[in-house]
Image 1 (cartoon, rainbow, N blue to C red):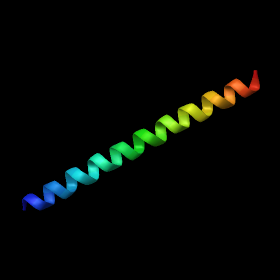
Image 2: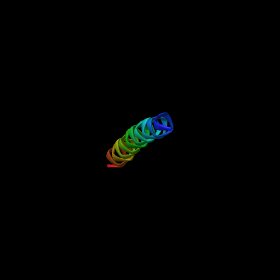
Image 3: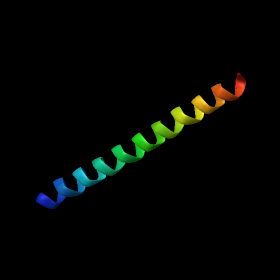
Image 4: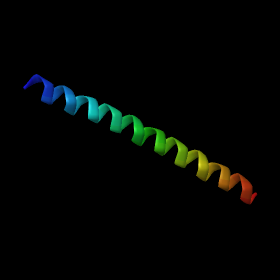
Length: 38
């Protein structure tokens, strides 16, 4: 059953990285949009 925990951990790490990248991209986009308004 170790492979189940390994797959679960790998998927969790990948999804965390994807969510972090999306959050950074979103914050940069909103910052750029705010700069365009000024």
